[in-house]
Image 1 (cartoon, rainbow, N blue to C red):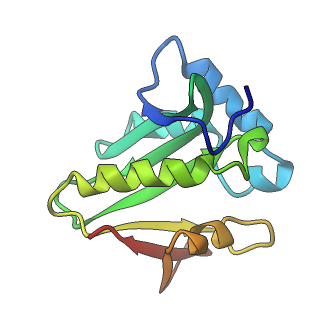
Image 2 (image 1 turned 45 degrees about the vertical axis):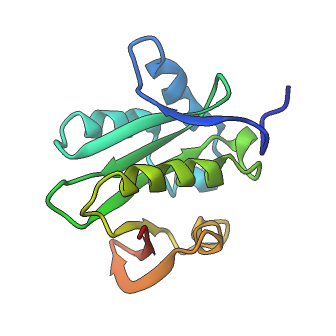
Length: 154
């Protein structure tokens, strides 16, 4: 069965049994895309040293297709979409959009969260158009050469 809009997307904890599969997903990015997002292995390592990191594998049905990591500080009125990666073969299938929907649901589960913030590298083939289609708007800030964006959750 082909994965896409009809697939059920879930965010699942990464376990000792699944960590290698999730790390290998980074290999399915183009060289250009690898310049825009850290390898999943690096992200998972960073998450273990950041107390406010919240990270999950993105699954379509029973297949791991991506990775998401948030900076989710309960003292703040926003969550920061630190990493979002959908492996190459699964891009442009609606799975990233569904994953963002689940991230929104997570943010809405926290009473004090008003928005999701993220950033992207402003280059051709970058994630800017994807985020704009989902309603993210630029904040006017640039952070480490990346355009900072936000999406209201309430």
